[in-house]
Image 1 (tube, rainbow, N blue to C red):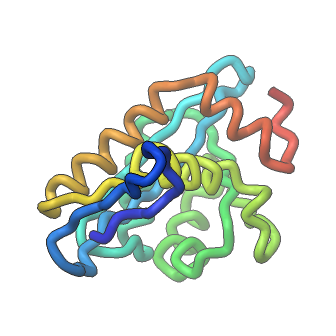
Image 2: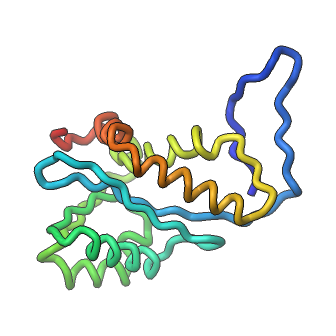
Image 3: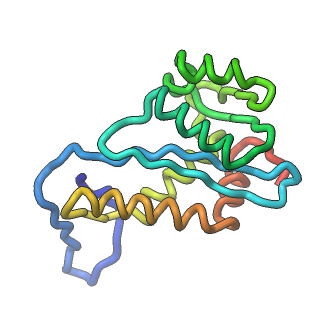
Length: 170
């Protein structure tokens, strides 16, 4: 729960001080999808947060099911090579649903091709920068508010797509 320390402004001679209540390894994990409508008119973001755990194959599968229920159209997934993305539970489920969902993997070590990586970078340098929570639920709430703010800003979402090296014809 330590703060993500970033450069900040302060009056000369008054170094900003971030107070926290000790070191903690508690965390909030986030998974996200950037969705472009078939005619490229709308861009939306879907997120899921997980307190005090990491996303494994089962959690990713749960997110994919929720995404399928929300979208109800054919889906083309483009994602990185995280082991949980290509592990057995997800791989088997994608194989069963291959008529509706097509999954393509990005090349290894290519975060510049992944617009969702730009979302995480933006969240860490804006909404979560220099935030030192006192309680764990403060961290969870701030992470939730940060991803909601990003998801409610279509011009910002389009900028993430424009600045990645893949062509989405926006």
